[in-house]
Amino acid sequence: MERTGRIFNIQKFSINDGPGIRTTVFFKGCPLRCRWCSNPESQNRYAHIADAIADEAYCGRDYTVEEVMAQVRKDKPFYDRSGGGMTLSGGEVLQQMEFAVDLCKAARSEGIHVAVETTGYIAPHKFRTFLDYVDLLLYDFKHYDREIHHAHTGVYNDVILKNLRQAVDSKIPVIARIPVIPGFNNDLPTARHMAQMLHDLGIQEVHLLPFHQLGENKYKQMGVSYEMTGVKQLHPEDLTDYQRVFLDCGLDCTFR
Image (tube, rainbow, N blue to C red; front, top):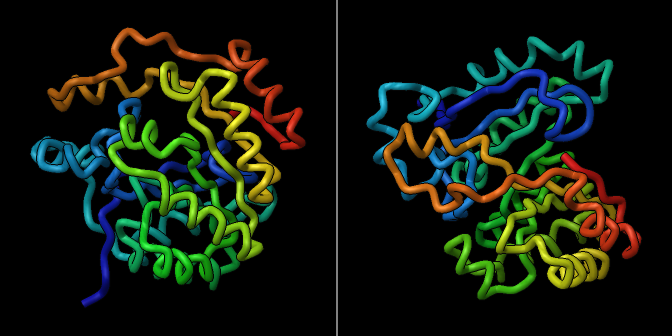
């Protein structure tokens, strides 16, 4: 039987998930438990709740590679003109690695650029294999400290950092993406540690993703507790000093 993958959204005309105009494919499933997650329906811990909601936007559905590609290839003229392509996101793409590889192969065989947004949380030998099918990595980098990382995401960052080094060494373009979260990593000392670590790894480009509350209604819909209720949203103008830390470290740092 043809392999399928569980997808909960296919978003067209994305402009913040890689270069140019893109179609972003959101994979269901994620082993992390980030408190600020705007897609709680994708987290493993909420899977049974999301699946019980009679709405495909929450429970997702199984797609074949051809079904996804039928949506993606519709906009190939826009990709060609803008330097865009397909972006795989989530959730965590690597939870469904075999399907993701098949999808990457299909897109690249049609001349479609493939970007992948990932936490990098997978066994290093599997990650090494996956890198062969990717044109650009949008790599989540949440915190430099393993204990703080664990307290706020439910996992340690050891394997994440190891895979980030592996990605840089592979010479695939890598953009570090930092969700800037109040009470977690939005202070300047943390920014300095993160900037220096990225610089030392050889990362050249960083995207800052200011905290927002766009996912709050999903928690209400699912009937689960949202730990970030009442936390003030961040905007680029709130983070000029934070951004300056990365710029001063020689990194191309912009907001998304």
